[in-house]
Amino acid sequence: MNWLAKINLPVVAKRLGAFKSALLLFSTIALCLFVGYRIGNYFHSFQTQTISQQKLRLDELYHQQNENLKHIHTLELELEVERIANQRAQQTIKAMEVDHFAVKKQLAFYEKVMAPEKQADGLVIDQVALEPMESENHYRLSVVLIQQTLKKRYAKGYIEFSLKGSQANRPATLTLEQISQLSQEQRSFSLKYFQRIEGDLTVPADFIPESLEIKAVLPKGKWQKYSELNESYPWSALVKPT
Image (cartoon, rainbow, N blue to C red; front, side):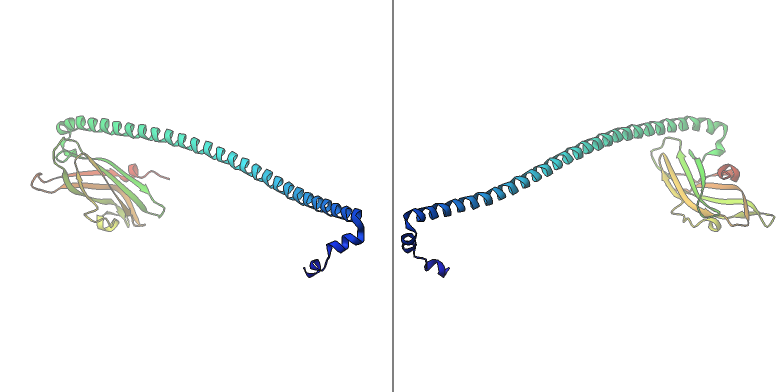
């Protein structure tokens, strides 16, 4: 910047004359204004383009937000419909359970008279199901017990089961310990209305099952007398051929 200090404006103006000095001054001012205008116009155009792009991006985000809100509202509506349907299904199931239990109580009266051997102090084996598993000769056993008589106290006990059939061309019986690892605690029940007991059992490959024997035992206690219920279920009726 030392070269600016060396410029002597009065000398320059004296050498150029008043007219040329004024013309040089105006030319310099005009050039500065023109350059400033062009630079300002360039930055203005750049800012305008940037603002336009940001506005488009903002509009796109607003549109996406609206679409997301619509999707959320649709999902909320579907969820509410599913919730109402589930509530109605639960109410229907409960009503069916109440009806089922009422029918069972009515049936208990006739069974006491016509078939007392099919219940033990009001306890009956309502359902027995065997579901084949992925592993060969492996099954999932499900037993549903129902207390038909209306009592204030729980019926407590346990179940036992065994398999009758043939092995090596001879009649044979497999005990619970031979076909299942269910403990007595897992086979125990304490019910006022109904209870499901489930477990796995495995049949030896060389054993041909013919029937599943189930026994429900109610041990003697302070509030109940000893009783037991024995039922036999044909294997072919429990396990459907695949």
